Length: 87
Image (cartoon, rainbow, N blue to C red):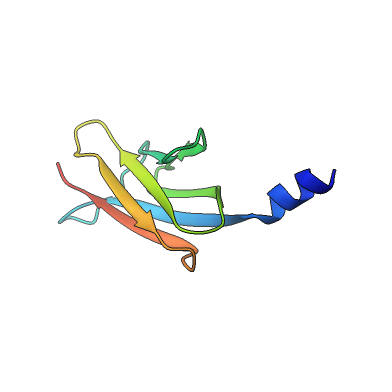
């Protein structure tokens, strides 16, 4: 129980938005994955997402069909991130 509690405390909530580079149009149904884990989610119709990530810096792999994949470094002090994908 103590180990499980410690694991829960070692996480933070991260929110963000994925848009199309240039037009800033929201990209719904984009895949967001924390690199090196099985943690991930998809953006909603407004391009928004939220997920729980480990404390410390993490890399997010952001993909959507028809766009170039991006890997984005999110610093430990960030609670939100904006990602623009190129066609």
